[in-house]
Image 1: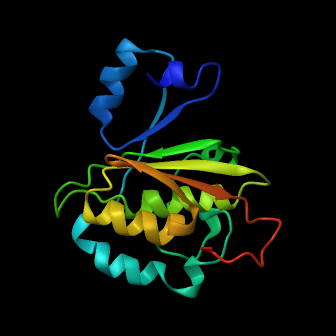
Image 2: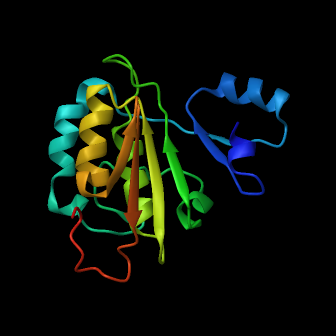
Length: 171
């Protein structure tokens, strides 16, 4: 599916499950995938929402150098350097209190979009029927950037903020 939707483009998976990476690479050897450790749990979402509303989390910058505890800082360098046209958040697991939550992934997707040199980035979040995905996507990808929702997938179009630092975090 991803190769037909992104024909000729670059698709990268950031995956928490090493066994999934090994299994899928056997079937699709050209798939680009990196193992990522998500160190927050779903039950921490309420506290992390408070963290995310702090001033240090509203500063648009490269997530690697952010002072915000929500920013994912351990991804491969090229993930931060690529001007992504589209980001899909469908990991980590996020479906029970002790599972890794998507709070950091959603926040970081928004920062990658805002930090690109120019243009817009489409960000899709899956499972928005769940509390974390709903609240964090609206809070950090911003209701004002939401284009549509179809079933459990929400679509945001986030403009670059890099050249207009006076632009508010959310419209």
